[in-house]
View 1 (tube, rainbow, N blue to C red):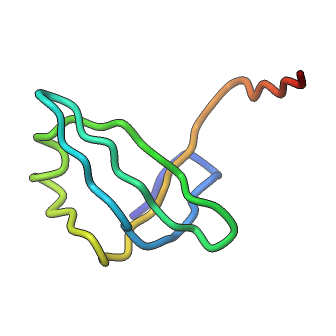
View 2 (tube, rainbow, N blue to C red; view 1 turned 120 degrees about the horizontal axis):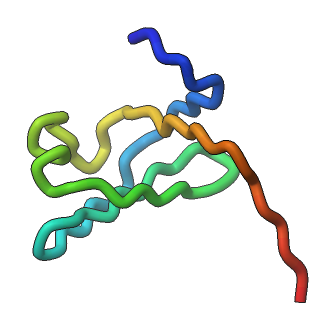
Length: 68
């Protein structure tokens, strides 16, 4: 797989929670768990399942940090 995104982090799918149209996929990347919101259709097309290895692909023009 070739992508223009430079932030590709491999991990393990630990949870898939489907809603009416959108699924929340949680990926354990070792030091943290990343959650992605994707369509239920994308989950099916990718064949995602808990325990499977997958990659988080992060492409953002801005990263914000906040404190309280």
